[in-house]
Length: 87
Image (cartoon, rainbow, N blue to C red; front, top):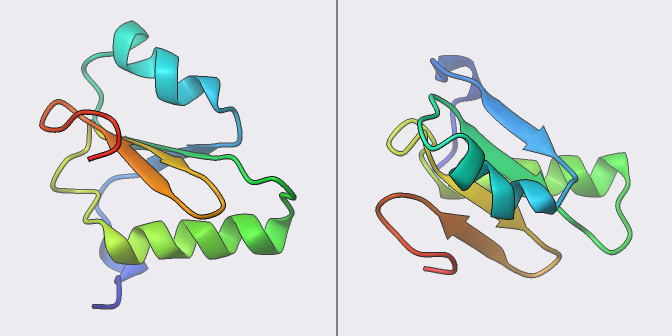
């Protein structure tokens, strides 16, 4: 399934700060947009955009806008009100 980036009605917050994954749920429990923290060992624009495209294709961010994703080199962890981290 290919994501249609132009049809997204809401935005997402993208950061390279891993602490967002751990602190945002407690500081801002009610959010209207997903948070994506991309933490790669050798981060550059090409790798960050590649992983961002993967997460946009793998998850429907509009279904769970309160979700926070921690994107590593080989893993994606999701935290939301519906799931615990890593599920």
